[in-house]
Length: 317
Image (tube, rainbow, N blue to C red; front, side):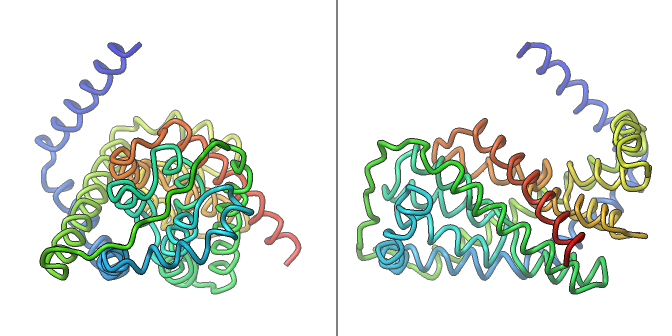
C-alpha cells in the first residue's frame, strides 16, 4: 500500500511539473494570484499575531494566563490551562496559529505529546478577520452570513474539545515555567514570525497552482460529478471540491450565486481547512509529536458539526 501511494504521488508530481512546463504563463499567473491572496488577506492577520504569541510565550505571560484558565480547561476539556491560551489566540488570529503555539509549548516543555494532541483537537480554527471580514462581508457581501459562519465554526471547535474530554485521562498537568528569556527577544520573535508567514505563503501559492492544474486537466471531474449528484448543482460541487484543496479559492466559488447550501458548505470548508491548511498545521504539529490521524479525524468531525450548526442557524434565524 505504501509503495502504491509512493508511485501515485510521484506520478502526480511529475504530471504537475509537466503541466508547469507546458503552460508556464497560465500557472505563473495563478501562482501570483495565490501570493496576492496571501499578501492581502493572510499576511496582515498572521504576522502580528505570530509575533505577539512568541512575545507572550517568551515573556512568561502565556504561563500566567494558563495558570488562571486551568480550572476552566480542566473542567471543560480535561486539559491544562495552556489549552485555553492556545484556543484564545487561535480564535483571534486563525490558521495555523494554534498549531504553531502547540509546537512552541511542546518545545518549551510545558506539554507532552499527549497533551499536545488533546489541545490540537479543539484549537485549530480560522479567525474572525477571515471568516467575518474576508468571507462573510468580502465574498458573500452579507454580514449575517459571516456571523453564521463564525458562530458555527467556533461552537464546533468547542464541542470538539468537549467530545474528546476523556482522551488521555491520565495526563499530568505541567504548567509552563516562568523563565527569563536570554537573547535578542525582539529579533528572535521577528525572525521566527517572518519565517512562519513565508512558509504559510508558500503553501497557499503552491496549492493555488496545484488546484488549477487539477481543474484544467479534469482530474477533479469525478469528484465534482459525485458531489453534483448530491448537491444538485455542479457549480457548488466544483467550489466544494476546490475548497477541500485550497480553502480561500473554494469560498470564492461558493459565494457566487449563493444560497443556504452554499453557506453551509462554506462552513464545512472553513472548519475542515482544506488540504493546504491541514498540511500547514501538520508541519507545526509534527514538532510536538501530535497524533496526526486523530487530528485529521477531529477536523472532519468539526467540519460536519459546523455544517449542521450552520444549517440550523440558516433555517431558524
